[in-house]
Image (cartoon, rainbow over all chains, first blue to last red; front, side, top):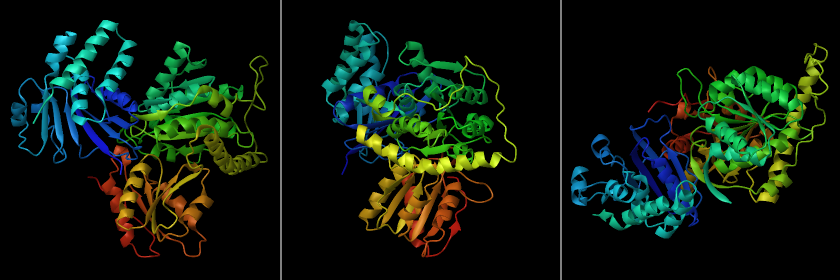
Length: 191
Length: 387
């Protein structure tokens, strides 16, 4: 049987969730995994809560329906935790990975999670502010997700980011982004 | 080379690989990224083509028509209201037998206004004389756009082709797509060699009119070209397979139909979901199959009859409605089965209008309802209940 992971992304319009899922996907191609990624079909506004989806599988993906019961939820902005029920329809035993400045125990309390889901926290704003000088959560969150998911090697993610970013940024900026991904991979905390 | 792109980008890649000469289009959601990408390719010099900016979809297809009669390889894309706005020109293009290829990112029609997927827009163009191919994946969208030029430009066919891909579900969903090498595409699809062209250097005036004595002969010729297109579509798909190692079923794409008791007939992307459900029910010992119609025009009546002859119940999933009767595909399938000695019962289901998600549970429900249906019963289930 094919192994498939279904991921739901919560972000605000403009935070780069779609781009993040794109880089994740492109890294997965390096591992011969199959991918499908789609936005919540419709319109999008800067700053408004948005949802995007990703399927990752070791076999070609046939499904063409929405993801109803995700295995994982990634939250790019901590203010969404109050605005949106990010654990809605998450599979029993599924994982929430959030950009969160507090401890993972605080996050679990805020999400009202009591053992039914795994909870992971990483301070992506702090990491990106320190490494890039700006709070851009999408690149570090890919690092954190990769760590939790375990399907894609960090080196493949870094290689993909390096390739993609080197077309757009100076080598110095590329290295800072890679460092942000690496740090989130290392620093993500879990319950 | 494997890349990670969506259905719209896959179509734009195909246009570049096909070395299209002229593109005229007007943006409309969810198709706009196709023509934006093509415009960018032309601007950067990756594609040596002329992009004609127009004031409407009607003008877009008129421009394509004009370019095509001069022997150019032509492309356009649209959706929904835009396709409706082209309606008049659709007939001019097909009746004049010029091989235009158009991608339609399927979207419902207003009112109520919607930007989301269903097949109503292209289904209402069923009788415009265009070949209609419905694709299931971004990969198939790319491959079929390449195949479409071979089909449309075939001297025995000379009929325009619509490549229909579900809006958002394919147009905006990113997946792994194998991008064929340019040299291989050049082998598969050499430059268009038109038999007759209108030369701008030698201007002439044409009146594309025919009196009652001649008009029927033109229509008869179109009908015969469509009949010949059936074989050409299959042959082109096979030839594509020999070069690229992928085929998409020609006219129809049956899945586990051979010994099936119930077969679900589908168009487009939902087929993949239906296959997953069929696999699951098969594990329970319920014999179900899925028959995807890749071509709606020409209609593959013979292939449909052959695929469905042995089953007890045929379910037809229509993402459209012919108001006052039933889903359009259901009517077609029923007609194809006429004359069989023991024809299966046919049950129609209308689902997924205006972007309503077609879930695995919905498809399982269809199969289970058909399982309970008695033999010989032919009835129509009313339009989808809202959820």
